[in-house]
Every structure is written in C-alpha cells, then in structure tokens.
Length: 137
Image (tube, rainbow, N blue to C red; front, side, top):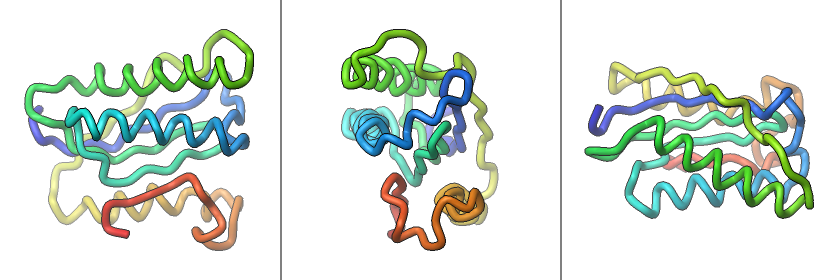
C-alpha cells in the first residue's frame, strides 16, 4: 500500500550474532540508506541488533514492501560475505511486518524499536549503542 508505514523485523540465519561486528552492522545501515536514497521508501527508525533488525519505514508509492526488504537483505548479505571472506546465508528467508494503522502509534513504535538494546541489557544508555537511528533524533 502506498505511503503505508510498516514495522519490519528480520533475523540472521540461525540467529547468528553477526552484527556484534560493528562493520557488519554498518553494512546493513548502508543498505537501508540506499533504499531511502533511491526513494523506494523513507526510513523512520531502525536498530541493528546482534542477530536481528527492526526497521520502521514508510513505503513509497508504487513500491513493493517485499522487494525493498529483499533488496536490503540480498545486498547486505553479499557485502557481509565479502567483508568476512565467507559465503552462505546471512538472513532468514522470512520477515515479519506489521502495518501501523494510527498516526499516533508511529512515535511509540519508533521508541520501542530504538530501545531494543536497552531491553536486551546490551547497554545502559542508547548513547552507548551505535547501530540505531530515528528520524526524530
């Protein structure tokens, strides 16, 4: 649906904590940025956790959600495998999506997304975690 806002979550293959490697996490962020720069969507918030990604986005008119997620996963997998000198699956095939139905829910979902490292006990402050961003910050 055009301009629909979605919360996407997807995990690494076998829940491998690939993104403990900061550079691998930055590859995912670079791929998210590419989709936004190409005007396929507008990234509102994201967090790259050690073994999964949460992403809040507004889909551009005429774009396919599945295609945009596939682009990020395929491009990041290729780049991560190259960076690590490996091959094989980086991501689980499936992803979870939830359409955000009410405008007032957007900020709450964004807060939920970026607070993941706090809830997981990875950091005590978001200032300590480098792999997140939100449009409102």
